Length: 149
Image: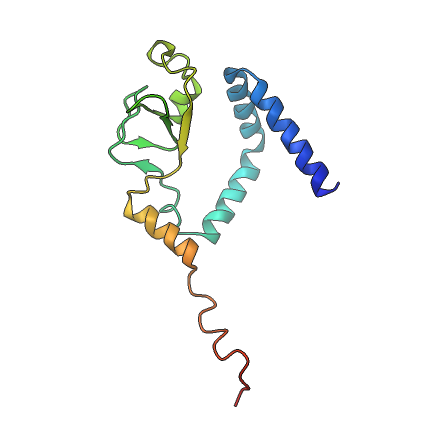
């Protein structure tokens, strides 16, 4: 299939997923993840080998952040920050049942996904190494256009 056809199929899938009720989306993604867990883990491992320092070896700890659903501190894993409330964060598990947290008060609110605590020096160091590169090609282009001795 062409790239355009694949793009259209992906957009149609995402549109259908978005039209589902939230709890159905969560169930679908849980079933999908469980059915593809080994393949996903291989991709994550490959990414970790490609960028070993990018997130401190997979640590997603949000220091100074408390889950307002289960009160886990510090919040670990994916962090969902409410865009409507001034200070309201949920861990992945509580976000999946956000319609039940605090009586469903934020069930219809929008949330922003935070992968890493960018205030964490380790996460910033890994991001910088990823952007800058690890120096594998340093000096390879020096003298371009000059004849070798």
